[in-house]
Image (cartoon, rainbow, N blue to C red; front, side, top):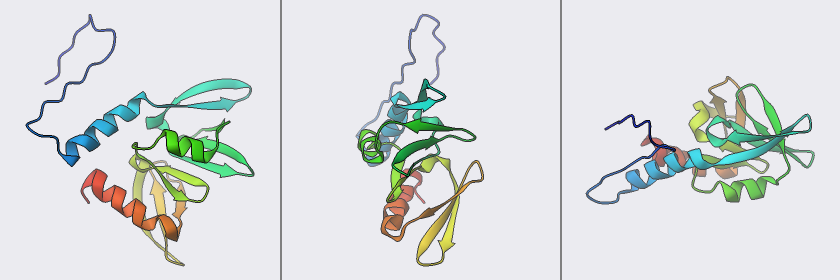
Length: 146
């Protein structure tokens, strides 16, 4: 049920259930990810980037970058720190220096050398390392019942 209440300062979400299931737990985690923001830097300015806008996070030449649909910000945190902070969200590791927001996945297909090529909603492509394929497939099954 949706109710518009002008007197509220913040959005409230109420979930009623007869028993806690894995699906409800996942739904709660998905909703909670809207509380997460990543601090990004661009042209000497600091930005608070909502997690739901992040496509992927990558470390290159000892610098960590946060990629949005058509924009890139630098993070001053390591990819390991970001990964541990975002545990339980839709962000997962798909490579030694690469984190993916699985809610931005459009498609995936096999790629040579037992890897997977993923296409994101913005048309970009990323490669999933062999080591992380099982983790990606399991998260997709859990999140989307595929």
